[in-house]
Length: 123
Image 1 (cartoon, rainbow, N blue to C red):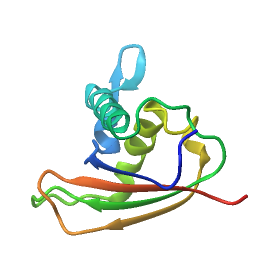
Image 2: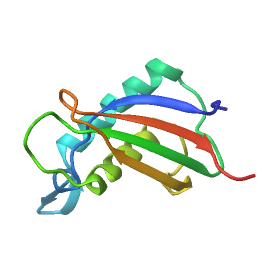
Image 3: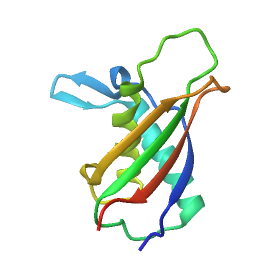
Image 4: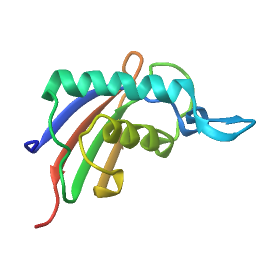
């Protein structure tokens, strides 16, 4: 079982606008989404090793440092990719376990990054 709190510094994710791709067969995750999942998986395993996903409710605090450019970004557009990637990396079984979420926009930083802290929530 993973120990809490868990802290990760992760790259800036693709926005929800680039997360999905329309194909003749319907919607699927884009190559950008798949690449982000793989990158987060590697970073989580490097930090925590290969462990069982946690059960129970989770509180998440996200400090979002957007890329240092002139583009406007909506904070809510980064959350789908982030929580799906953490699920894919085996941090938890399902992102619906996140029952409390705090997101703060911080000053731009390089190519952008997210500082994520996960803790248990409730009893």
